[in-house]
Length: 354
Ligand code: NAD
Image 1: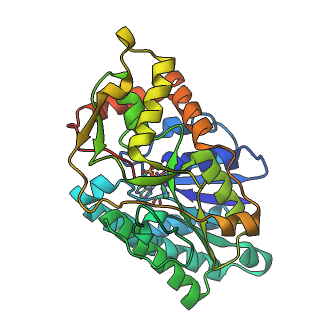
Image 2 (image 1 turned 90 degrees about the vertical axis):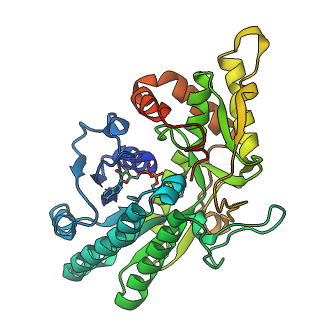
């Protein structure tokens, strides 16, 4: 397969590029603008491979996208590029509307123009895979409910509203123009190469610094956690075998309260990097005022992708989070420059993920 991955220098996109490029039968072209969230260091392990190519550019540049699609005879356009941080979307929604909505619109136009030129087998095989989030569904009560693919959209933040708008555009391009699309909506990811503004790396690195660990509100907001490599495997499955026009929810049935995620990280760090005099990293937990419009609970029903495509996560939350902590302990070369940049941010200005 010839893949064009957008946002391949980001957290999930880089995991996707590393996974796809591991198969020499695949060609992987990574189109990324390299915003603050894009990092070519995450792609060091594949950068010299002949089946991998990086192109710095904007998904909104239709001429560039069309040229790449033609030049590389792309079979799957996997679209991950986005502004992805909820807190940033509250402080400055403009970039979210521009990239996530207008950028996706322009990408769809380029993809349609390319698909219309294709003939025979190439036309049959082409698909546009749109990668989205469970946050488009809004939130759930603490004690009941689960997101299925049929749950009505009800986004809460500028980030999730912009992703919901993009999802609607993708569906419209399928229904109105017949563009062959597949879509996925995934729960919270964690794992290696995660930009340190998001909850898991923020807590690990701040704890290593012995600084206060900021947790929003009472810490009882619930997220459903998935290891990024399990997400990448699910995306490959859906791109290859997903039903055209269908969407698939991706999650590992791993709901955890934010405070419990933070405590788990603290307990593991107590074992790996004990604090002096028997103190625990959990002593550093500091509650900060809640995020406006903070969704209470997300929970994904992954039955469709499990039943139709046989996908299963390889990591439990416990094994995945322990492996993630080990990765951060062993890869300071990767996170140190980003963390030092982040450390300037005031306490509470960037707490839990999304
Ligand atoms: P990220 O912020 O780590 O990476 C986004 C990447 O997109 C960056 O490399 C950035 O440089 C690039 N980018 C931004 N604007 C661009 C533009 N105009 N043109 C080209 N590239 C551009 O994000 P992530 O966490 O890896 O998320 C990837 C996708 O998965 C997003 O669409 C996000 O909505 C979705 N998603 C994320 C999660 C999660 O837990 N992180 C969960 C579900 C879905």
